[in-house]
Structures are given as C-alpha cells and as structure tokens.
Image: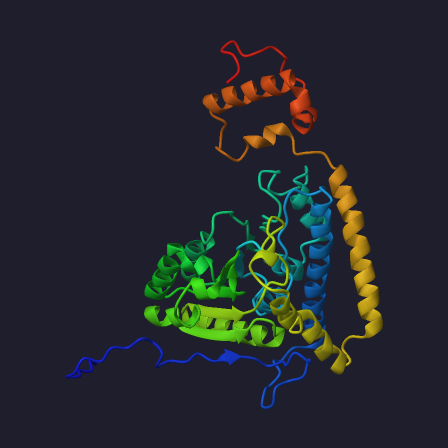
Length: 400
C-alpha cells in the first residue's frame, strides 16, 4: 500500500545500517552469544586443509613467477576463508562462477595439484588446451565454470545459468564470486535486476577487500559498501566478516536455503583484505601502507581457524608442520613435472571453434604451419608440436 506524506521527505539510505555477521574472534574463540555452525570434525578439517593448500600453492607459484618460470599469477592470500567457507556451504553439484582469485574453491572440491599445474603451464594436459593465461581454471566435473578475463562477465552469466537451474528443478543453485571493484560494472546491476525479477536461485558473493587493484573503496562508491544495493532490487542481503570462515560458511549455508527452497537471489558481502598484491604485475606498496597490511595480518583467516581447531583438539601442531612440508614438496615436484610436459598439439588451436572446421579456417591454419616451419626458431614450442604431414612449401600468396 502506498504511504503518502505531505511534506518533502528526502532519504539518503543512512537510515539503514547493515551489521557485519561474525562468529570467531581473531584469537579463534567464539564471540559471546555466538553459536557454532553444525560442522563435523572431518568437514572442518577439510575446510582448513583446502585453505592451507591454497596458501602454500600461492606462495610457491608466486615464487615461480618471480623466477621466470611462470608468466603471471594471482594469489588468494588473505581471502581463503571467504572463498573456501562459501564453497563448503554449497552442494558439490552447485555451479560456481569465479572471478580470478578463487582457486580455493577448486582446491576444496578436489582439483588436484597436477590439474592446477597443467593449466598454469598450459601444457598438453591443460583442459583449456593452452589457450588461456595462467589462473584461468575450469572444471566441468567439479561444476566450476572456466574463468574469463573480462571483469564482471560471470555475474549476469550466473543469473542466466541459475534461471536454467530453476527450470530444471533439481534443487541446485549458482554462486558467483566477484570483487567490490567488479560491482561498479554495469553487468553487476543488470544481473541483480534480472535475478530479482525472474526469481532465480543465485548467490552473488562479493569479496570486498578494500581495493580495486590500486583504487581504494572510498574512491569507488559513496554509500556503505556493496550490501545496500540489494535493497534496490528487493533482494535478501547479508554482510559477513570475510576472514571468519565459520561466519562465511553459515551465511552461505542459509543463503543457499533461500536460493534453492524459495528461488530467490541473495547478495553476500564479505569484508576481507588481500594480503598479497593484486597480481604478480602489481606493487601494493605504491598505494597502501605497511601498517595497514600489518593490521590485517593480525586477522589472518588461516590462523583464526587454526586456533579454533586447536582449541577443539581437531588439529595439532605436529599435523600443521607435517602438512605444510608435504604440501610444499608436492607442489614443487608437481611443478617440475608440469614444466616438462609438451605443449598442446598445434591442431588443438582450431578444434572446438566450429563443429566442423571451415575451409577458410583450414587455409589459415595451413598458412600458420608453413610460417612456423619457415621460422622455427621464433616458435620453438609450436615447431615441436607440428604434425609431419604438411610440407615446408610457402604460401603462394606470401606471408601475412
């Protein structure tokens, strides 16, 4: 029912304050009045092990990038609780559409170190056939949509996929991760509006780490974060401490109930911080202070969960040391194997483009092979993967 007033009454949104949901203190103990989620021992350990494995993978691969063994890398460091906690609250058959710093979700679902390495090095076992830059993972079997480079494109795609899940009626939902910087893209608003209008089972999970690369949040938006935007779409919303894996897990678990049981979208804003650079191409010392980083290191999500597990005697110091040593050794050994594997066959460059290779595409491909044969020193990996059925004759039209 419309409510009328008879004097102008402007509103700014300050009338609404969105609290932050938290369960665990940085010391690993519950806040007063907080109730632990119903996590069994094996489930809690699986969450922590996935977070730890992600941290170790990130450390080793950033070092590999600095050594020149890898062209590019992005770390999840500091945001593991947001990513793994949310994933752990889903059904393993729910779809995840990630941005680019959610390798923890794949780690939790069982993506092997070998699979990570094959993608990072783009070798012959890479599911993407070497077509993408590092960290653009994807896994059909683990219901993890292949990552795209353009910012925020996965957000409206998640709405569309969730609409299909609604029609299928099999009780699944889609969760899409993105940063607060991506929420400035028009794709974000189009996705939320479409999801609300069509009432689809999608969870929009915003990792608000305070920076869109080097742009601080205060220069991105004037309002109180991303969460209030849900009100414009009449959507359920919750803000959560993104470094508190128990709170993230419980918030996402309940969000999934809303999405699946009522076909209603939910927006989750997880307040966190990336302890590493935006990417291997970034130097955060140019836009944030060491004191700020130290403040957030004291809130490290791994240490918080580790302390909670130790207090419950679900983890031990001995296990911690053993697990870290094993992970570091496995990552290093696997990386060495992946580096030595051959590149994908050159023919895979044009497969999956059309159901049947068109004559025009085949002519272009034949010309490419002739060019590589003429200048093999410029394309060493391409030259070794050439098949032997095409001669070294040059294109009668000349090289482009």
